[in-house]
Length: 158
Image (tube, helix red, strand yellow):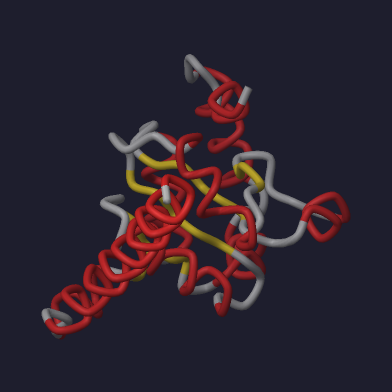
């Protein structure tokens, strides 16, 4: 009898958590409007300005192998399929900017973060747009700003 009661409570807990997550998404979507549609996006210039001011974290949500092949040094790699388990590595005091090359996974990651209480945006021009923006002086300014931060973005995941 004790085993069946324990099983019952575990199943109820799982269903209540699943309902709560779905309900948060439903609540978010039911209040979605033009203001939110604009607020959910950020371009590379705005993102770099926030990173230089230490007001944001850039999260590259591509798979580990993609990140290892090429990445932005200002980014922390948390693959989309690991994000729900690794949200504790993110700084809730900062805007979380999700990014991937073309924004498809970044949009999904941003939705997950937003419905879990994070202030988040997705990089609307993607990592490819960010790479294009970070040429010459812009790259130099960002690297200098990141070097002056304490702690650095990489230290936040240690």
